Image 1 (spheres, rainbow, N blue to C red):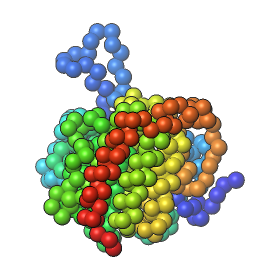
Image 2 (spheres, rainbow, N blue to C red; image 1 turned 90 degrees about the horizontal axis):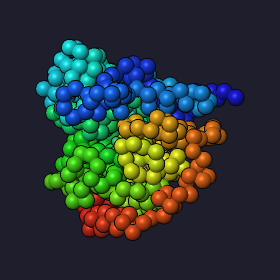
Image 3 (cartoon, rainbow, N blue to C red; image 1 turned 180 degrees about the vertical axis):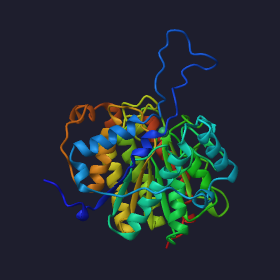
Length: 383
Ligand code: ZN
């Protein structure tokens, strides 16, 4: 039974051009030529995650319950809200001359500049849609990802910071005041943190595997500065945490701070590389776990932000499992379960100890983050 997309409560941003961003082969050798007899593999940030996610959404029937939101290219002025003119010019020049490194581990391919503009503009179009109101929630199935990109260079597969640019668009173009950004990618959202380091109008909360990437980034004591002190919240979690620990971190840290902050818009940097099957991370979040995290964000958006919720794709490197995690997220946004069988039996898989228990190291990490921000909770304005 096809739903009438005009009645959909959720939307989807996707553009086939996102698949054309080509970061090349994965650098499995450190210097010079590849070792003999080692067959090259695609870059981990290849097109397959976003492509398989798109196919899964359509083939499961979920796509019929989603309003399609067309992406548009961000303008140079949009980018300049965060990025330096030099970085923008470098990405443009590399993209026009066949590709190259835009900073640190963030390669552009031919044409990547235009695709990255469309990626940032996709997140901005999603904000437009939830503000204008044809839908409450939008998932942005986008690449290249954004949350590592800093003002003056690309980092960690990210060229421009999609979620930061979406938040700035919401404030400058739509006049929204307080924006909450929750980043559950397994890596620290260093670029987004930097964008709003001194800004009390953006509450940035990152949950990530402690010490993963970038190195020396995302520690408990990184809380913002000046007027922004207390509005950056890092919850570094030890490797091995799964659904139960993420749920506890949400209940004890993310949700109380979000309620206090009373956002007018909720953005999520959604990395499904915290999944149990990911080759980049060592966490154990399952599809059920992602479903629960998403439901929490839906509830926060409903209570404070007139339902305005935009979830933007970041990392996720398990070709098999990550698209199903994303499907679970989009199902939750659309309030529609496809009932599709998963590649791992969630009934058995979600009962593994890393997903059901909060180990002592996880409890210590969550308690430490709780203490860090308990003492600062006075800092958040009661509005
Ligand atoms: Zn990541």
